[in-house]
Amino acid sequence: MALRYVIGAGVIGYLLYSLSSIGWGNLLREMPRTPWFYVIIVAMYFLLPVFETIVYRFVLPARRRALLSVFIRKKVLNMDLMGYSGEVFFLFWAKEKLDIARTRMLRIMIDMGITSSMGGLTASGLLLGFLLFFDVLPLDLLLGDTDRTLFLGALLIVAVIALAGYQFRHTIFKLPGKTIIGLYSAHVGRFMIIYVLQITQWWVVLPDVSFVVWGTMLAIWTVTNRLPFLVTRDLVAIALILELPSELLGGVETAIASMLLTRVAADRILGFSLFLPLSLFSGSKSARSDTNLSNHA
Image 1: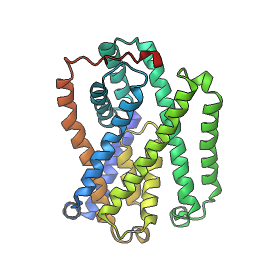
Image 2 (image 1 turned 60 degrees about the vertical axis):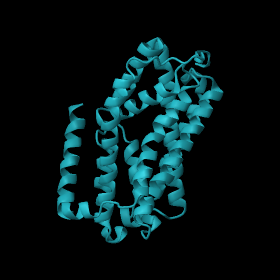
Image 3 (image 1 turned 180 degrees about the horizontal axis):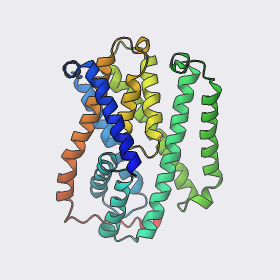
């Protein structure tokens, strides 16, 4: 646990050093001016809580508004406190507000978590495969003589994991097979929507930048966010992106750095501004739905 925070502190220190060389005044001047950048930030922020609200409604007897509130707070805790702290919060919330036994709730959450991870791995593999197939990733520039076979092997591993999950679905999962397949497909679709929104968000700020730059940045951001046990995944991704060769970034390093930092800051502001009001106004309200959906679990 301590090592994670030491690594996180090191990343923050290195990032601050890199940004100081760019100049804080330049970063502020390069902040995105188009309102669409901020509209997409809000859309991306609420995508996961809305998605979780929809899928959990099939297995929990809870009101939509109550679920949306708890999933927003769950996201804030996972992003700004500690990984999986949001899951612990949600587990206790379900016991208190829905009167669902923790063992049963934990089993549902495990199924949801596994399908989400498998969907994320599959979507990441599809993204990297797409970028490699169309030569969007400049591997020669990024990695020198590294063999592309290594990347193709990584994609194969992702495919094997997905197939293994399907083959042993009755052993691993407790939810019905059709439900698991539906959840897995929905998660893959969710990640694909995130990729499209992310590229669009960068493009509306710097429309003249090559798609090669956006594809490379998206690959770094996606792979970094799949790494476990990192406290500051988004900051690690920014640090890696700023280390890209200048001939690839084409002289817009300052604008890219400002754009990425604005996104991180906006996410934190949204989280802090939502968590306390949602906690205060949802405390005394009933979370159970009038319709009993628990038979689907």
